[in-house]
Image (cartoon, rainbow, N blue to C red; front, side, top):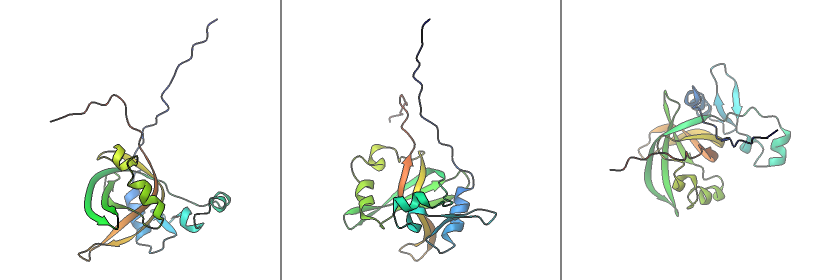
Amino acid sequence: MSLKIERRSNRRTMIVTPHAVKYLTGGAQAYNNDINAIDGEGVQFYAGQICTEDDQAMRTLLVLNEYKPVLEICELTWHGTYSKYPTLTIKVTDGVSTMLLRSSYRKPAFDKRFFSKRSPLYSGKMNLGMKIRLMDYSTSIWVDRKGVAHPCIFVEKMMAEPKRKGRVRNSL
C-alpha cells in the first residue's frame, strides 16, 4: 500500500465584495470615526482598532461587527510628499463605483511600513488590477486642496492579494 502526498496551493483568489463602496460611503457620511460602513438595511459596521484604542486584548474580548471588504485598485496617483513620506491617493472599486483610499497618519509606524522597500506598494502587490482586503481602516470625508469633499478610506492595515507565479507580462 503506497501513500501519495500531493502539494496543493493554498492560495485563494480574492473576490471583490459587491456594494462595498456604497456601504463604505455611507460610513464616511455618518461623520463618526467609530463607524466604517452602513449597509442598505442600516446595519452599522465598526472600526475595531479605534473603538478599542488599539488594545488587542480588549478587541478580542469585545464582539464587534466589523466590515472587511475586498476591493480592486483601479488608479494610483502621486501628489508629492508629506513630511518625509510620499502622498499617494489610490482609487479602489467594487466593480460598480469607486472610492479614494489613502494611508492613515493616525499611527506613525504604519507609514514607515507602508512606504518601506518591502511594502506592498513597492513589491508589486498594490499595482493596478490587484485586490486588497481592508483589515484596519476608518472612513471619513477628505477635503482636497481645491476644497472638494470626497468620501475616503484611511487604511492602517490591509492584506494584499498573493502574487501569481508564472504570470506572463507584456513588455513594450
